[in-house]
Length: 494
Image (tube, one colour):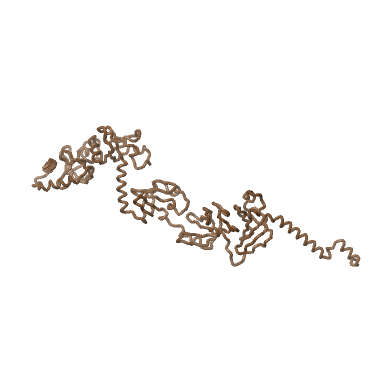
């Protein structure tokens, strides 16, 4: 029979009472002990109960009348008293078999009188120890494990270097013994190794519970230009910038802050690449659902141009609500190749709602005037008009002819030098004379010219003079001195 078994049996007999003591089946006891010994690996954690305290050891129950031993020093407080008693449940780590006894430790709960041998045992069995960060050294921290000085590099203190170095000093943490060299003169610890191990456990749990479409709570960990990283318990999920808000173009820093607790919806999970895509706007009310009621078809809306594309202009009506004015609906008075010819970003515009698609989240607008049953009275070609500048664009000037009617003066008809700054020369609201050179009744468009103003004025002046002369020639009272002479000869004058 092994020494280990004999020692264990002697300990059992010492703590047995006449009422409970009886002859044991030694073959069965030996078999159970052998099986347990075979299962235990160095560093393996077990949950057990205190079976007794004797001499320098605390005995723990391993089941089947098998026991392990823990150095009693681990349970002595600063006043010298043992802090456990029979029946207390504890967690311990298996170290090795020494002298026929299975040796355990609870070094995760460090004690003042810890020895170098205890730290070596923890290193050999790959189990954690507890130490207090006592100060900062070159390249890392000094950690006191009991009275033993150890070293933890900066890179091994945390998963990420997000904290100030001084914030760790004075704190007590669990550490893994990375290296034990020079008989304990060089002991290197790592807190990060334990955190990574716990992180992996949490990830495995998450894999069993997380599914696309579910809402999860998390804490904002990092804000980047492309989105926000959120810790959802063991793993980070990314909220892309487009999924942060219904408001397009909003900066992430204006919406969330590091440390914020938020709820987001899982959009996609890729465990092979350890990527989880989240959406914050998916759990927020969609403002577009109110569009049909707030902006019905044919209603007039006002907004700001936020983006110009080759196919049209996007106009923001309110946070989260953008409408599109197709290039064919810009109503600039002529065919255009790009919206930038008639609009610019930031410009305030008035438009009409022509179509709404809630399913596709599309709001279509038009800047063309709606033709009602009554035909708009358009001025005839050649008429000289008094107008007011409404908008200066790259291709010319849009002027207001009258209420509900605008006209367009191309640059070539402005009569100014090439490269002139029309914005300065003709500010919005200033008056301007122009001549009608083209009219499109179907599209309600009027094209004007400033270069023909002088010609029109001269022509009108000549026409008025000519008409006056003709009128005088036709009037008997308008014959002048020659007429009077003729009347005299004819005896018509008294």
